[in-house]
Length: 339
Image 1 (cartoon, rainbow, N blue to C red):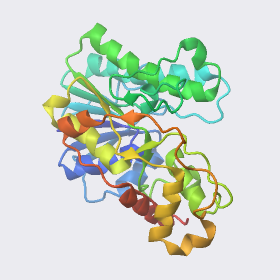
Image 2 (image 1 turned 180 degrees about the horizontal axis):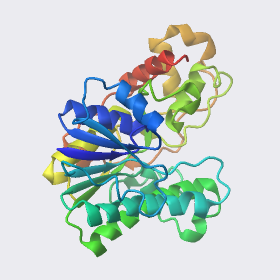
Image 3 (image 1 turned 90 degrees about the vertical axis):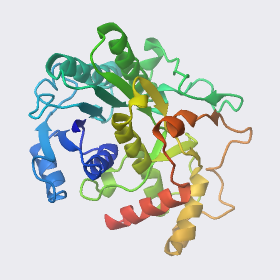
């Protein structure tokens, strides 16, 4: 299949790219700069331009940003949209988080409808942030599934960057489903909603300073920052990036995934458990790690929300990696870039 992958240098997309190529698909991936394209190409030398090519999209939050990228010869049959707008030190939630997220999602759907009539499937990376109800805390009596939507309002969204981030994911995903309903394009969509994404980094794209937020906590624990007190876990569910990436690819390969939302989680974890797995496999970090009596980083006393991840296992046939394997491989990948 001929596939457009957006945001190809991102943590999740780098793994999606590997799996697409492994499965024999032909890929064009969008990147923000020629330099990023060169790095990716150098690390996939075995694939010629017919299997891996690039399109530069500097800012996905511009209207019509993808108009040219969606045109291809041979034409695209599927789009996997992982790119999300880049933001540091948010001062204006509306302008820096909400608008770019919605435009970045609806923009590619408009471009596909207008200029890529051969595309039959669009997969969008969303987030557990669009499912979770942030006002209910750990909500032990509730079971989260694809049926849940974050109830955050436009007024609440602009109150602070944390609300803004969750709202940006929620509003962008809602905008995609609204587009499907209102515009009736000749493609289906599927959305992927992962919680905390852990797992090995792709070494040629990451430095220790530029890790995705989820993996920063593993780096910090390795580096002794949790020795006196383990930080609170926050989100108690996770998925390995390789399993999440595979879900994106399976969603273009399986007809049954069409027009479905997928809540993609392998289960529960705590920061305390991260430290325990590191100690088990890498005893050389023992002196930097917290001990069994170090406070913090555990599950809440009253319990935590339940999860229903049956759809992703049934429809996509995914078998999730264990937490132990995920942390072990992540640490190994961090060591490779100097942790």
